[in-house]
Every structure is written in C-alpha cells, then in structure tokens.
Length: 157
Image 1 (spheres, rainbow, N blue to C red):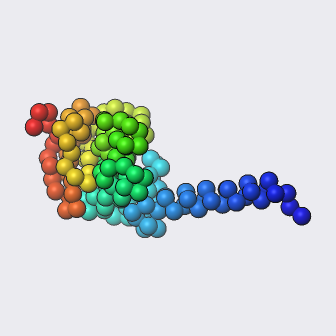
Image 2: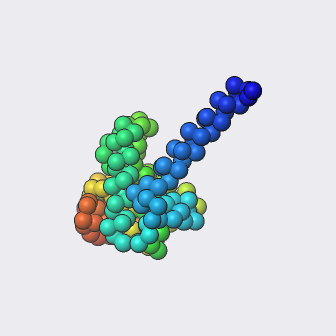
Image 3: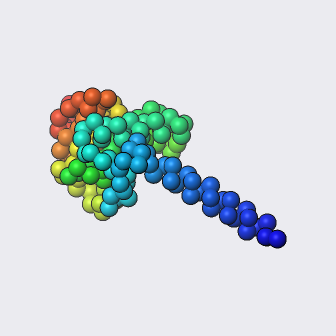
C-alpha cells in the first residue's frame, strides 16, 4: 500500500509537468524547437511566424486577465525576449507588453544593448514603448497581423 503523501506528490508533479509541456508548445506546436534563450522558436523564422508569436502573447495576456497586448524581441532570427501585457497583473502602468519583452530580452542576453533586434508586437507600440525600444537600440518595429513595418524607433514621434 502506498503512502498518501507520496501519491499526492506524484499527482502534483504530473500536473506541473503537463502544464510545462503544454505551455512550451506555444504558438508553434511541435514544429519549433527551444533555442539557447529557453524560448520556443518557430521552425521557419519569418515575419509572419514572429508576429504569430506576439499574437500568442496577446492571447496569454487575455487568458491571464490582463490587457490584450503581446510582444517579442528577435535578433538574428532568434526570439530573445517575449511577454504579454503586465499592467493589470503587476499593477504597473509601465508594464506594457513591449516594455516587458525588452526587459525580458535584456535579462536573457545579460545586455541592455539590443542593437540589431526587431520588436514584433500585436499592435503599434505606444510612445513610451517606442522610446524604450529606441533607448535599447532596437533597429525596427513590426506590428499587427500582417507584420506592418513601423520603421526604426524614434523619440517624440
């Protein structure tokens, strides 16, 4: 006869493993692979694949109870940062998806300089997020379902 604590522990481990497996598939299903950054990568690194990941972040934001925004940061064809809106969840007015994705990329790369990176977001970045992209050295911004080109980030647009 097995110990009830051991059974409970096994059930908890199974639930956690299931959740991790499901969330790691993300927008790319089994077609992608996890890169050095620990982020699921698309099998084909195209603008549409990257914007789909930003839209997946938007879906997660809504699912978690936040505003419907998502963003990712891509450098050299690799997703290096990602996030959904964290304004409501963190009670942080600066917790926009783009800001959080920039922070995530800087942490993962251990570098505040994101030169050469492209920011993909579910909608056009607001002035605050565009300024943050500018200061981070991000080279370009793309947004929306068609990956419209917003150009290089600028201050005081």
